Length: 358
Image (cartoon, rainbow, N blue to C red; front, side):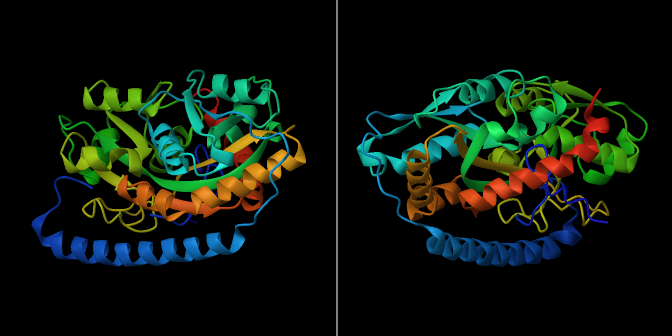
């Protein structure tokens, strides 16, 4: 029974099919290298297939007469420095002034309330196409778990750009340096786990993991992945579930330790980190990232936004920048992304009792 959480862990909810522990026994080096080589080949094949599909789905939409007249703002509902922020800045840089009739995409961080503040701002914004949202699974989760004034139907998707697998990471000062050591420790201790917010993909992954193994976790919720990382590096928590793309450089330089990850195969950038499946835990989980606009945006403006976003997120410039940043590229067009989010919402409802109170 694979816990792909096809919705519940895609940023609070999803499972899918994309892809380091600093102290791996010497005899496993060859196996790890082989796994990494295979992972790299499979990842390349998946990326090529995604790019080919993307190229086929790009469609030109007529530019509305009066849009855009100014720069377009993308609200990131988290602090600067986290995976959602980094991905969005890569998008804005890739767009430059080559799209939207020469206008730019401007990134604005609006953190707070586990993304509720940013979500609410976009849901209540004038539906003129000038205010967009960096859309994660928190959009799916929050209406089911919190008292918010918006619903999933308050937004219309523009496209998905990333599926970033979960990874269990610990401070370098932790007494446990491997997955097995961590599990043994957690069986007899209450583990303090940092999250970037209640009901985020990372929080949900931690709950599912603890439930499966019968562990007791105490959660330290924050407003962003950057604060979560600070707590981890400073030893203020015992562990954290984060996105692979947010942790690769820190794992490589030894600032944190990766114990296991939620991809279906190992990540070529951190080949010594096993998957949960390899360790006997059938958890395939991660977070999605994409973009959306308020639901009331006029059809001609919406179609134009979808067309321009499609061209940006399938461009070599954007895809190459994502690879350079070690952020797993995963494309879905607007319609497929909307259907995916809707399904995730249905799937997440089954986990609501577990999330409340944690």
